[in-house]
Length: 187
Image (cartoon, rainbow, N blue to C red; front, side, top):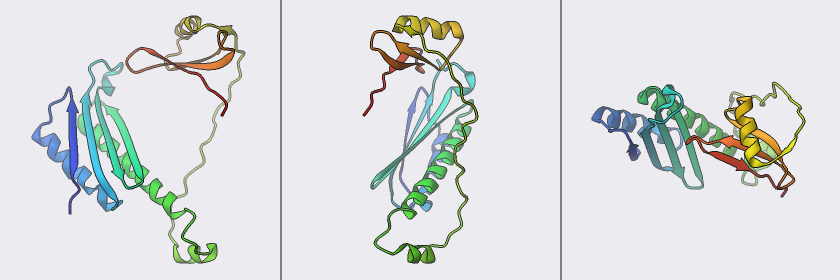
């Protein structure tokens, strides 16, 4: 039984070729995880993307009982965006299945669980911090932080000590060109 795939488009015409391509590829996801209930594929063409190679966007959302997996890829070609998003979903499914397998179990002692489930998987490598950087924070307001971010040529984010709130904040550039501000709190 093939999985039903919902395809939506924004600023893009879904041709028969695109529809057949997405349906054929995405309907096979239930072979990797049979508890998938819904697959949604959102395709878009973003004219205002900063990089011309990021204009075609494919976002895939997979829902099932107790999980939601999502991937998004941006490339110069809609078909490669779809392929890359599907590859990312495959990796997420494998990671999700691995987490379920390594869960607490159903009361089986650890020795028996390992004796029953003997599968060799590629070990995930621990993330490596390749570089550490220290810098002095100077108290400033939000407007001055935006100006400093621009002057320094930091396009993605800027960390500063907010003089108004006496806290460390992160200023970042959103995809639509506006700014966002992260104000962390201890929990």
